[in-house]
Each structure stands twice: as C-alpha cells, then as structure tokens.
Image 1: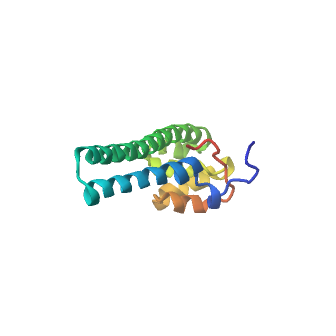
Image 2 (image 1 turned 120 degrees about the vertical axis):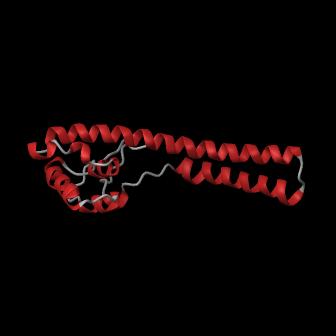
Image 3 (image 1 turned 45 degrees about the vertical axis):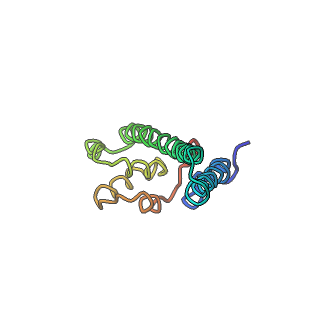
Length: 147
C-alpha cells in the first residue's frame, strides 16, 4: 500500500528498516565479535578467517549500497538533463551541462512550475550543496522510486 504522507524536505530521506536497522547492526556485531575472538581471546587461523569473512561481508553490504546509489545518481542526472531541456527557457538550455550531478539530484524535487527560476538561481549563485538547494524548493515534487 502506498504511503499517504506527502513527501517533503523534512521526510524525503529513504530508510530501509531491514537494511539499516537489522542487516547492518548484525553485520557490525559480527565484526566486533570476530575482532574480539581474533585479537583478545585466541588468535588462530580459524578466528582470523572468521574476522576476514566478517570484514568482507560488511564491505559487500556497504559497496552494494554505494553502487546502487551511484547508479541512481547517474539515472537522476540523465532524467533531470532531459527535464531541463524540456522546461528551461532557451537562454538556459545551453547551460544544462554546467549543472553538477549534486545540483541535478537536488533539483529533481522542484516542481515544473518553479524549476526554471530555481535552476537559474542555482547557476547564478553557485549553489552546490544538495540541502541548500532543496531548502529553496517551495512546491515539492516527490520522488517515490528512490533506492
């Protein structure tokens, strides 16, 4: 069932409870326990292998998340460049490739009606921080397909 709460700057961050509150803590506890076993209790080949596996599993979870977010950022960049091409006035269309990925990621939340004004402000004022750009958005366009 779809979430009925409208997305805003205050609640747009995506948390995946099973990943953030179960998987990562369990992997971290496993790493701590393996560290204790190898460094404080009894150093052995078995405890060293267990520690190495714990580190590898935690790194795998971390990189799986980072890689997914990087792909998402690239897709957002492309989508927003196409959106800007359709919605910006002619004098700004030639500057579409001047936007950084960070700026485009923040601009995706701006409504079509305010996009041109905000996009001009971002370039003219040199706004680069995602949060400072998002805070300028008056009519929030939700992105419910985030990873």
